[in-house]
Image (cartoon, rainbow, N blue to C red; front, side):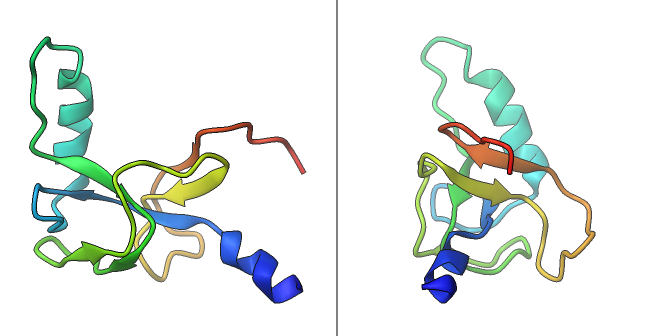
Length: 97
């Protein structure tokens, strides 16, 4: 059972376009600010979990555009022990351990 618990580790959070192609994270940051505008249709959104690349132009698949409550997500790219990037909790309470 200890191995199964590891499956709930932090999942990737990438910025993608309408075709789930990875784009620079700054595009999603701008989109998030524009969501307050009435009738605004975002072109870029965060893609939570799944597989695929981190390099702009690569595809993200096997995840979705809605975070799973209680799951942790990170925008840190692969190889990221101690790397830069912001982590976020995906909804739900993030109690301390």
